[in-house]
Figure 1 (cartoon, helix red, strand yellow):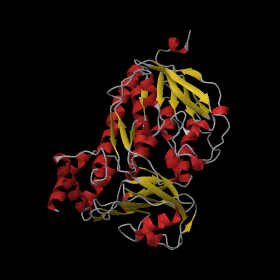
Figure 2 (tube, rainbow, N blue to C red):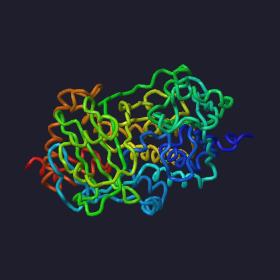
Figure 3 (cartoon, helix red, strand yellow):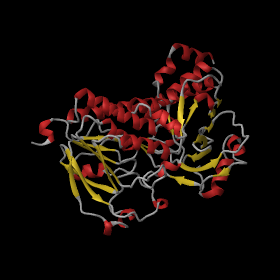
Figure 4 (tube, rainbow, N blue to C red):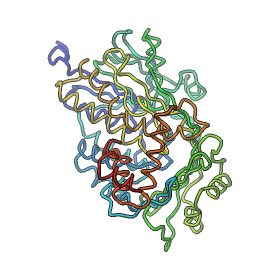
Length: 471
């Protein structure tokens, strides 16, 4: 008798991709799947370190208030562990934030985010996931296809990658899902193992931005998954610095926001472990940072305010300048069209413009919804998968609408929403931002919405709306 016959709905779950989204999803399924297999193309480093499968990892990351609440709910004590490892709690009022309307008002904020380099966050989450006996890892292994039919996904095809040969510098792919036959893959074709099948009752796509699951679904005869695609053409350039003594930023962090249409450049400084800063510069299409140290300095000089440039004048670099092209924002509507037995989480479901800092938090939302649904139905069967897809779509909707509406302010953005309703939304948000520069009631509400703790409807609460209109 098989395990699925002994306990219907409690068979095997396979997670494609062992990044943060995949690890959180695997952890969410503990107790509901008898066997959880995480297939990760990289081999995890022994210590917290940047790795090839997370090319965005060298850039500024934060866990919004709603995100670290969700993380603590799923992994009690993890926030204390992160703090012990050097992560810093940064209150919203400790950010010197230059919005399109001016500097945010100062007030005793309740909202805060966690700031650390991505390897610290990933390592602590990985360490926690490794404590669960039902979760196993296939490192250095690619998923190369799906098993099943147009009606249901029943597992994955995997192949061991063989010895690590190419360098991190050459990688611009995510944890899984690069196109087979790409230059990066062909380097290793001669050392790869045989393709083998892993049957599964539930497959989780956590392969990130470069997921190949839509392509594999087409090979099974599935109709295309409906998607929205918005591309602001954003590009990043980041560098770590040792924090110089005696520099007063007026807070722990700095955020110099874009201002459409004439100021498409932004810059952020976040405190991270080991008394360092991570500084990420970005620009929308047509204002991308140029490569290298000269490009970094040039972009820094082109920001709306000199605060960042002055703060870094005496700062000693702690690493090289690193660039990143994240590609378009994509929201895949698996809740509308998807075979049974498949759920997408994290960037594989919704990829955001990273300048808004939503990605990590939404990935944690996905895992939380997956666990809640499995708990409701007592297993990982098709009903759980269907309901999880709907719940994940709901959890990602507000962040997607918010980021796309901001991207739409730039004429160079492609695929963005438009029309009278959007123009009305922009005018109202402009009033909110103006109010947030002088009225703490508005500032606090705005921070709650941006922290994904409250929906945008909070801005229409009488006390907030009244303050906005009085302004």
